[in-house]
Length: 412
Image 1 (cartoon, rainbow, N blue to C red):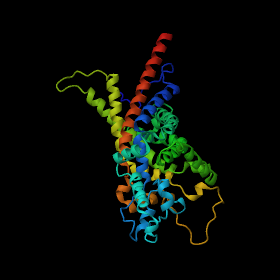
Image 2 (tube, rainbow, N blue to C red; image 1 turned 60 degrees about the vertical axis):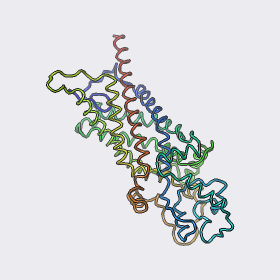
Image 3 (cartoon, helix red, strand yellow; image 1 turned 45 degrees about the horizontal axis):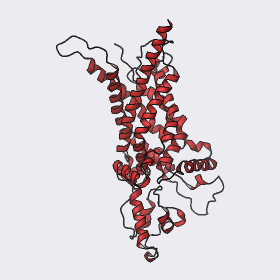
Image 4 (cartoon, rainbow, N blue to C red; image 1 turned 90 degrees about the vertical axis):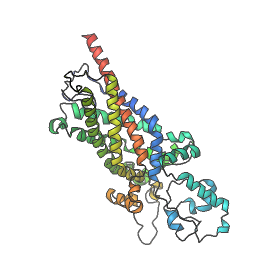
């Protein structure tokens, strides 16, 4: 018996031009899954981005000699509000704090100090649940769905390319993978290649979504401000800067997709074998799985393989998020307008290092927890996202195939 592929099409199946699923039908299936996934998991994605974007903040007294160095490690998106920013930050920049021992405590009354401490506690998350609670309480519940529109816009082309590309690479007779790669490793290779194409196409939208979700606070101006910020960056660095972090995205998405599709097909194969195996002492073979059973197989296999692949690739997700959120002075001014001061060369920010060096920097500064920051939110997001996306996509394809077969039989 031929084993079904992860996309619900048997590799040995002979395509019938009259009943084959069209690209438009695949697009509808992928879009439906993308909408359901976005509505459900966007809050977890917002928390994941916030957790990964914030650096490790050490608990140190503001009145010790280590204050300046400690406060330099505060997350760039700390979100000090107007009540505190002009009091504590020099030049509206969260790099040098006036709370240090060099500053006069008398010039900064306790209410202002309390304001800064309270704001730090509000904007720094310790866990996924803590992030969900603080964002909803301090910024409004709708903030948890910030970036949903970008998710939907990004998801339609990405998922069409991703799923349709995987279908073609796995099942089409013209596919080089089907001709040269064994059936065991075909899901891994096909998933990786499909993700490379999809990630390259939607990388600018991914950067916009990441920056939008990483921006704290409430209000309606974040969308416009993020667009303006990206426009200034392109004026300074060129349009190629919109693909900043693409290498890190590839490091995250390519192994994730390979592991996901390989795990998905293996788990689904095991579930189907367990269901169709005859009972002990009986030679009677069970009937083919019903649509409900097939949906359950797709859902469970997608959740298991997606969560495991997400956990393994979390360090690359942390690096990708921090690099895309990172803003330096040259992003805000066209080339040549920022004059370099004479003196020793400025050290390269860690976010501009190569992938291995950047991840090594995170490991040295924050340890293993730093590399896996936000892994709970990531797994909680990816598991249902993969389950809903693949099961909805397969259900849509099944319905489309039935419609095509009915039309073909009526026209015959």
